[in-house]
Image 1 (tube, one colour):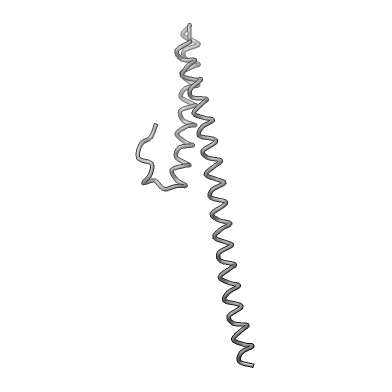
Image 2: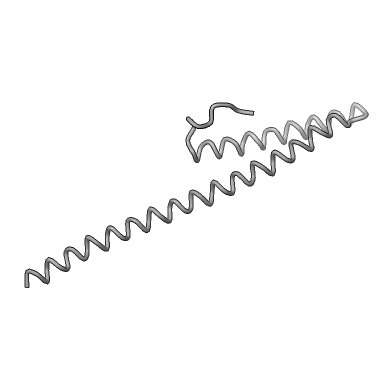
Length: 99
């Protein structure tokens, strides 16, 4: 009888350990997915900033220049926001410089 009770106790401990490992694995995968999404957003916004800078140099009138500078500023803000999200998820110590 004591062997049966011991078996049930050990089985519960093993089930709890497996459940804990699965939970950690699920959280890790969610973190990886979020980081992948943030990197994709960062690269997309970086490309938008590239085209905004090109438009600044291609502006021919003052109005075009003002519009291009506004677009460049908005793109830079979006890039910095995406960079900060990445830095928050991987740890601030690994991100020492900002754009």
